[in-house]
Length: 190
Image (cartoon, rainbow, N blue to C red; front, side):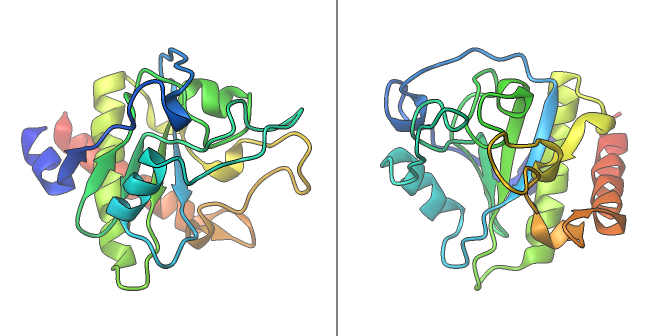
């Protein structure tokens, strides 16, 4: 596992407890891993980490929406590194408002910055996902795209995310290919 984590190149850069996305700390025992794409073409993992720490990623608190007014997820991955923003035993705000996607899943955002290499980012994400599965006892069947978690009050309820792993806005062969990579790395850990 240590060798794979070196390939992930993980840096821990937590949002301070009691601020922004961690102003309310809700414990979690993760059962799922949710994969996202940032759809931000001008920011790498370090820039996303800074935005989370500065409270720049706000979300409207609504009857069906975000519970704390800030977005936050556990990891951001680019073609050079993965950065951890919050402990994996805390709930984030990245998937489905107050549903099981936020309450029970570790959120991983893949960067899409123009200067990045998407294929390398996807591979790094697959490695990180495999390690998190192993550490948390999460089966491959519980690795989900953001699409999986419907968002009440939104139309359409299922977001086309991560869009570059979806086909016609839904999981298909590209998503199954990603899961195959995750499983390949997971098998290396066993």
